[in-house]
Length: 293
Image 1 (tube, rainbow, N blue to C red):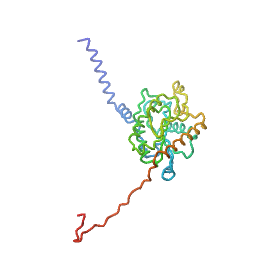
Image 2: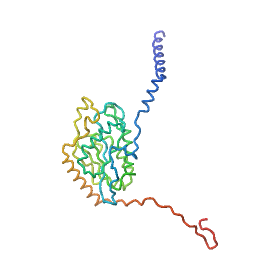
Image 3: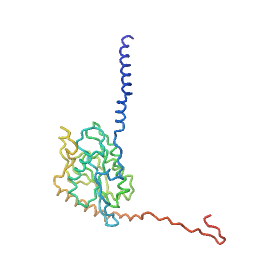
Image 4: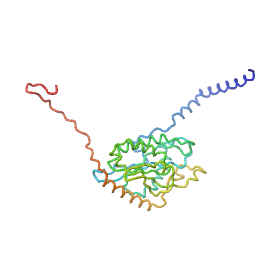
């Protein structure tokens, strides 16, 4: 009994100390800050929630015939100092994503419509990266694209290496669309090769005239990130070794897509727009009674 007394006394002291710390105003403020520091979900109705999207809507199918939008899933940064979830409003994150996109954007025609949403992706510095927020964001961005931004054109979803964790959310988002909308999803295209996780995630996917397709972009070396973490942009998520080869491959792929669309997919009709409400004069019988009464 006496031997157990010091142990119980020490345990009581520890409990009292922890309670005092928890009630300390500074500790309480820090805890509150930590609880509210998670990034807020982007609002994809706002242009600032996209890494890139056309400044003006591209020509619609009923105006110019079939064409294809590219919906690029943002690459996962290869290096980031802090663990947790990256705020898509963070300036360094947006610069890194913009630079990565610019490395391949020149290989596509200038008039090519490209959409790429900013997502709350997990930091590569996290021991167990949590993709739940990023997956929810991708589903929301896909919904906004189809409901508010798509002009009846077909769309190819382009997935860079390292984004395999987003594929289940992309499949769920597409499953929620109408049959007509899904018929315009011409492909899910892997941007580069050699990512086993991405290959596994895309296995069994079937859209358009068959997928996945592949564009020849090579992933950048990642050993620097493992040996000494770099700031955002220090290690590019992908690079283009030969822009001419990428441009040629995309031209060939798009020609195949357009051929499939023209031969197999009905063009959507032009939306009728809002109907004008008009009033109807009451109708009376011979004895003066209103028929609608």
